[in-house]
Image (cartoon, rainbow, N blue to C red):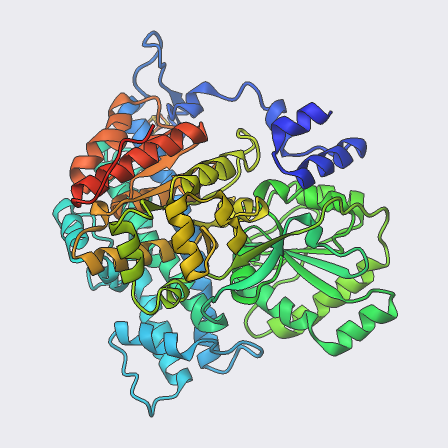
Length: 628
Ligand code: BF8
Ligand code: SF4
């Protein structure tokens, strides 16, 4: 048993809770992965297609069986179409999340969202000015918010020909996009066009399909996700560094525990507010609880962690295991990355499960729909449900103490820590104390030992003087590993250590949720602009060591299209086409100055990344070495 849990996760809380769930006969994601073996080899290579009813079709990778689908599509077309649809789904998820935030902003402007307000008026004015909105002092915040919400809705189907926020990219990058005809035109347009192109009988050029995939991804990175992040900051405040705690040890045995899971901060912000309502705290006290504790999971958790220092109980592969503590009185979900298994596991441990979004239903969960106009009242109701559930607890197992971390590194906070300009970071890179910076991002995937990819890669990178910025489930993994306190400089190489000590920052900076990957784009653009170069000239890289989701494919594609070389852990389903693989891993370098690599071994991935960084240093005329 011990051995099995060790191959499944590197985390102590994960291993101990796997033991609990095994004792209780509860099936988890790892058991289901095993039951699915062998997984379909055609699908794994991207060689199956069910885009129409003449199919489903598959291409024989060994050249003996069919080489064409019924319509005549070959391996290159089928692989490129499948990848295109993954990007479209990922971009749609992020962008639709962004639209939900814009709806709240519009409702706030109309005074139809009780409990919500403008959390960062300075940012509201700054973003509004970017959209050419009159922000003169006499105009009130709500008036400006109304105009900005209109302008942002317009981005989803813009007729301007390009997204406004794409203007944040360095001029050289925008020129490249223009030359390749991949400037993102509208958030919904690119996703819709991808679905069109991949319909039978439309785009059958594997190269043009892949190029449109990049444009679709850019409409996420410099569009939908960027809108999600910016509007979340405007509504709930721009993050600043603050301490927090991580792992399942953040649950409290003597308090009512509410765990918020998903991605959209709209519901969780309101629940957090309700949890501080003195009447509800008093009610919890009457039921014998010492308080009401809100903790996060996945990216909703990251949103609250970034802005309020709310503790986070775990990342993707902890979402089932956390129920095994028997200490989760209410789990509240919004959307994305919520395993439909949760509703079946929860009753084994008394946990009340509630879904909140009209577009995300789950078996075994009560559905209580949140809208801007009813959110404040519903949040109080949910806290009541949690207090009731506390009284039904059985055995509680909280097997570890939480780990300290610091989150909240928005670009504004990072530039603030640098003294208001990127110059000190650029200088540290120039003199070689910091070799470069790497975004370690993305999910967990049960095909990779939980957190191993993130933690080992990050440990190696900071040990070799690369600053790491992270988001999503990677950020939670690195926080659990203890990399996000100032004392973590002990894991850093001497140069990075000196710089972090001088600035008073950890060697791994938590930039937020997955939509917050756009903070990495904005930071990269600021560094490039400061030096007067393109993003692809900088000693930067991205990595998604344990990715699983379609959103991660979109993120990786917009990183590469923005000029950031990106290393994936798990292989995407493209192996069935040598042409597609070659374009993604080699050919894109000529077009974009960046491409993809795939390397599941974190030590090898670190080597690849450091070689790339040293090559970029050389290109900039900086000191460089040959990483071994
Ligand atoms: O958006 S990192 S497993 S939780 S997809 Fe999901 Fe992946 Fe986690 Fe956040 Ni991002
Ligand atoms: Fe088969 Fe072509 Fe239809 Fe795909 S689109 S299922 S390859 S016939």
